[in-house]
View 1 (spheres, rainbow, N blue to C red):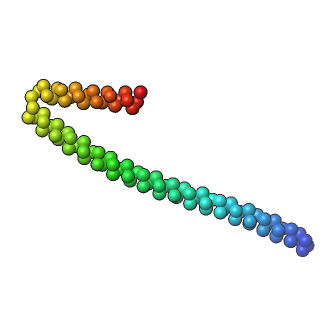
View 2: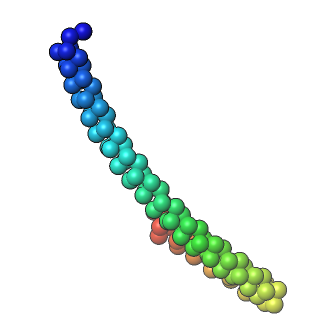
View 3: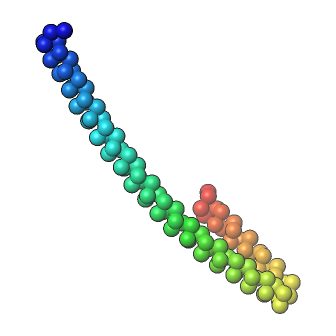
Length: 98
């Protein structure tokens, strides 16, 4: 091979290397953004998990209070409470899902 052919091939290799370097930089930037998005999503999930845990404990306490009230009160009061809860559920259903 002549020097001219070797210089031509070396020039092509340099162009290919610079093109690959640019692509690697783009991929590195994309993976960095994906990592940021994952960290943000994990933070949101942790916050939601804490809020659901708090809600579960509040609902558990409320159910215990209902059980105590049901054991102390008459059947009429229990029926009224059940009717109230059913009405609230229907209200939220039609308010949020319709």
